[in-house]
Amino acid sequence: MFTYIKHYILTFRYIKLISYIFAKYLHNKIQKYHNQGYDMGKCAKYNIQVYYYGWQIIIGGINKFLLLIIPGLLLNILPQLLLVTFSFASLRIWTGGLHFDSYPKCSYVSLLSFTLMALLSKYIILNQLITALI
Image (cartoon, rainbow, N blue to C red; front, side):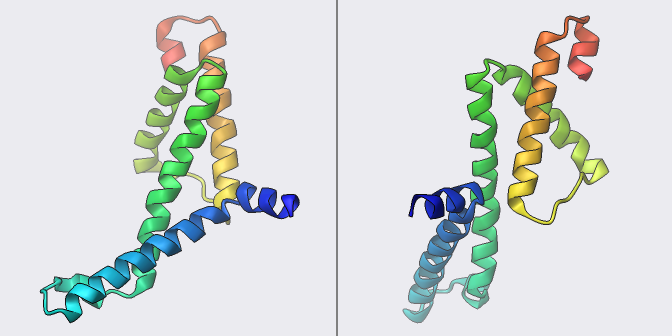
């Protein structure tokens, strides 16, 4: 039983479960109001998969942010980690980034890369310009 729970957490399947629960709840609420005669606009026409996908993006983003905060606090590199993350996010707009075939691979590679870059920028003694670039 414990190995199943560990696998469930390490593969981030809880994101899918929570997203499905939220999407189903939202879809049911919208349908309820729509059936009562309220004008719900385009919301009433959406399929539950649209809400599910949206919740996956939101919860996945929160999950990645929390995964970055934890090593930042544990290794005392939170400012450097946030700087690396925001720098990467601003560059990704133009470059597109590297895409993996699964969410766990993306999360773990991003976490490892950002943490290593933050550690480098903290512990390699260089001038401030080169540290900011790292």
